[in-house]
Amino acid sequence: MDLHVSVTAPPHGGALRCGERVFACAVGRGGIREAKREGDGATPAGCFAIREILYRADRVQKPESRINTRALVPDDGWCDDPADAAYNRLVRLPYPARAENLWREDGQYDVIAVLGYNDAPVEPGRGSAIFLHVAKPGMGATEGCVALELEDLLTVLKLAGADARLCAAAD
Image 1 (spheres, one colour):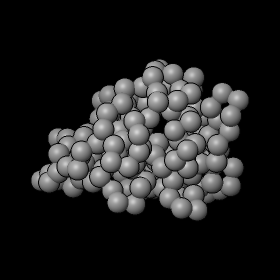
Image 2 (image 1 turned 90 degrees about the horizontal axis):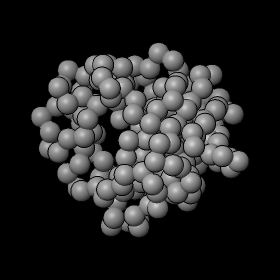
Image 3 (image 1 turned 180 degrees about the horizontal axis):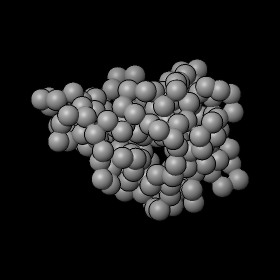
Image 4 (image 1 turned 30 degrees about the vertical axis):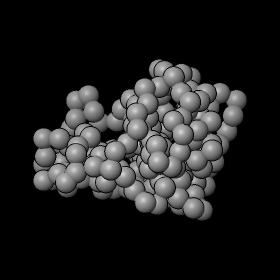
């Protein structure tokens, strides 16, 4: 089952449809764009496979899902340096190039669905670390990801099949 994201309150308020259910979501501060670039704050337009689910086992139970799931560890990071060979890949911290820490204290990465955006093949500068993750309080804009309330995210991941894709349409 594909998950469909649309913007309902520009620039970043959105709706995610999963079957007959609709959930409020946040998208990137730059809206949804066809021509995604690193650092532009936009959510990429298109359909992207959910590659795997990562979660903080010290904070939440393992999400119920048919999608491959594994627990995060404190040194998990994601390389967002376009000049590095590991760009848009999971890395171990500390990492010599710029990398985002996935073991966050704010709860936004307590559950992460890694989206298959710019990963086959990776194109430097086209954007990295595009996830479906937990929304910040007040459903504020993301840096390019799609975010849901934790309970909604867990419901969506439970409903999604192993071959689920997230589809976002440009504004």
